Length: 373
Image (spheres, rainbow, N blue to C red):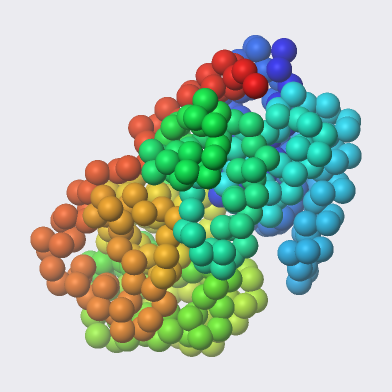
């Protein structure tokens, strides 16, 4: 029996590893253990409930105002103890968080095979996204199995010298997770927040906003907030709904600039179930999140990306997403075009989803079974 430890520290990691973990648990040839690092706290636990998962352990490593260096040091030490006790044959990490990078390094130091889910994403800018771009490049130097979500990601890995037989194009497990959650939403209350339901009942088009990236802190975030104020003031048939991130660098400026503004609702962070329900009922998505870029195209929603570069160029190339950066005028104009140009809206909404067919987890598990060093 193959012993596998999956490590997750943030909500996106839980969501994207959930379908892989479920499939491993259902397969008698694997013993699978899900370990939480606690890089995030409340929103991580909410994601576990939403995905109906129970962790085998939680390292609870998050502390207030923790630096990346402090987190990395604590992770490396704590994860090493887990690996010593569990003696896994494989460690699976997802994406590009500090948890993913450090757990891959801890496994590499013990010469444990590393599987990297969502491998090969590149922006080619070390500081956008920060620190994720460097994290995922580091993981690629240590991983044994690279599960690329797209052909573009595979090509990036091959260009860096990763052996072809160590790379598979699996598709993105976010599509697997969406398929599962869509089924759950059919059998119960969607959980739409009251401001969202009120806006829909009033006949307003809802613009769902998510913004939390470090590189937008400061003036960039102020520009975003100014753009949202202008949009709410100039389009009386819309409602901006913004689940605010708990990071004080985001929460403070957002509440100061947008609190109490007509047709803008700031709400507490929501779980994955509520987020997908809101996406399904939104008119468009305005985000700096990588996961929302993938989810938006998977749900046929136009996505405006508040970043200067993205490691997910497939959505841009497909025509379902567009970069607007963190410039106030570009954001206002980008949203305005989608509100007034029906043909543009339709083209973006009908763009082909480049991120997979919902069978990524299957392909990943088959690749582990057939792996030969």
